[in-house]
Length: 356
Image (cartoon, rainbow, N blue to C red; front, top):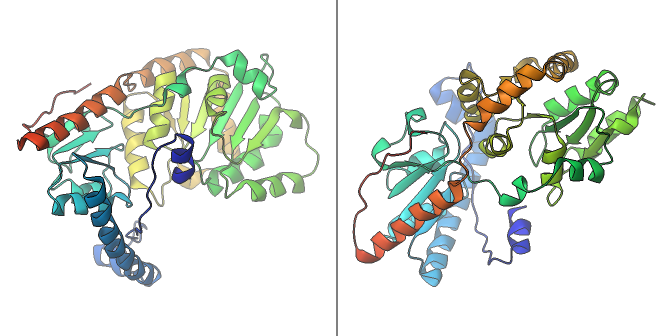
C-alpha cells in the first residue's frame, strides 16, 4: 500500500526486506513464554534473516543516496534502515506516533539524535525524555479541506439523518466488522453508515450482509474496502466515528473535532490501549471494550451518542485539544535541524519543549 501511495506522490521508492518480532500477547503469558511461544518462534527465526538482508540493502541504499539525515517511523520496516544509519554515522530522527513506543522505537531510540513524539512528552515513560520533541502527528491537508455537503453528495447520504463512519484500518478488523454487520438492522433505523471494512475483509463482510437477507433501509448502508482520494469526503460527512485507536486515526479526528468512539485492539496492540486511555482520561473520546464488543453494545453506544447533542459537543471540544495544526512544520524542522547539525559535525542539544 505504501508503494502505491508513494508512486501517486511521484516520489522515489526503494523497498527492502524486513521482519517483525512476534510475541505472545495473551495476558497469562510469562516474559519467557512471550518470546518462546512455538507459534511465533519459527516465524521470528525466519524474519531475523529478513532483517539481516534488509540491513545489507539499507547500507547500500544509504551509501547511494548519501543523505544528510535519516528519518524513520516506528514500524518494524524502519529497523534495518535505522541500524544502517547508525553504522554509517548518519544523523537519525525517529517519530513515534503512539503513547506506547514499539520495539523498533525502543531499539533505535538509544542512538537517535532526536525522537519526535505524537503526544505530549509527559505521556512517555520508556524513552529518554532529554531527546524527545513534541511535534504531534502530522495530518494530510486534504483530510481537512472537504465540506460536509460534498461528502453527503459523494456517498448519496441524506442530511436528515446522522452519519456514522466506521473504520478498522486499511486491512480491516474482523471483530468490529462482525459487530457492525450484526447491528445493521437496528442501526439503519436511525442512522446512515459508511463502513470501511478493510481490503482484506470486504468480500467476507459483503457475504455476511447478503446472507442475512433483505434489510429495511439498506440504502443507508455504504460499505467500502478502502478509501484513498474519497476519505476526506467520508470524514467530512461523518457526524461521529467508530474506529481503532491508532495514532493517525486520532490525529485526523482531533483535527476535525469529530465525536469519537474508540475500540482498541485489546489482544494484539498494546499501543492502542494506551492511546485510548490517554484520550479517555481527558474526556476526549468514549472507549468500548473490544474484548466484549457485541452488536448490542455497539448499537447502544451509537444511540447514546447520537441522541445526546451536548455530549457530542463536549467530545468535539475535548478531542480538538489533541490537534497540532503545525505538526508537519514542527517535524520537518526537527529533521532539517538534525541534518544541519550533522553537516556541521555538531551534537544537538536536548529539547523537551512542547508539553501541549
